[in-house]
Length: 243
Ligand SMILES: NC(=O)c1ccc[n+]([C@@H]2O[C@H](COP(=O)([O-])OP(=O)(O)OC[C@H]3O[C@@H](n4cnc5c(N)ncnc54)[C@H](OP(=O)(O)O)[C@@H]3O)[C@@H](O)[C@H]2O)c1
Image (cartoon, helix red, strand yellow):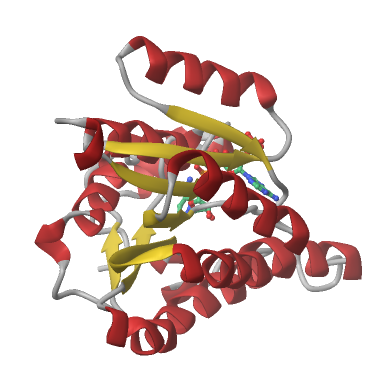
């Protein structure tokens, strides 16, 4: 592949877990990939080094998805260094478990800011720099929106918001042939589930959780030409957990 054929991707929240696997997969698919992180420069730098060692190009940008200015700056830096964007993946998200009696205003605002407002603002900031025919991919959760779980009400409402927003965004961007789709992973082996893998595996029909690379496979499909007629959809990959 010559340099002119390479594509550009931006992954919000791409230093580890599902986002890290998505960055690695996109690089393998021929994307020069920028990604953001917020708190763990060690993970971000290790991923950049790993991708460099396989001959790919990745750029780590510290940008809190709760901060609108940081989001805009991350987009600007990506375009400056890698050019117009072919695919944007909005993966950054947080999970805090507390029942309604104990959710603080601070926690509610933080989850709304990162999981909902940050997703919307990331897409809004990227849109002017997305190529016509480009891709927008979000990460939601069908488990969160289709089932109930004590202490998860705020997380659940944020993921329902993501599933809803892709529908309107898909129609807004259809005139430019930009597709907008939402991936809904089931329990996946990441830091978010540390300590709960055994319990989550036991609940799964397949008796295991997903590997981040399996979710990245869906990112790869949605970022590819093969998905060009799919837009406004939420794709569940949960090992049958919600059947
Ligand atoms: N794991 C699951 O079972 C599961 C299931 C369904 C949906 N999801 C969703 O999938 C997404 C990724 O989950 P994960 O399990 O891979 O999470 P994770 O292991 O906790 O990794 C989160 C990633 O997002 C980044 N991030 C977190 N907060 C951020 C912020 N404010 N600004 C910018 N980046 C931020 C982290 O960067 P740092 O390294 O700097 O902290 C890290 O790269 C989330 O939206 C989550 O809700 C996960």
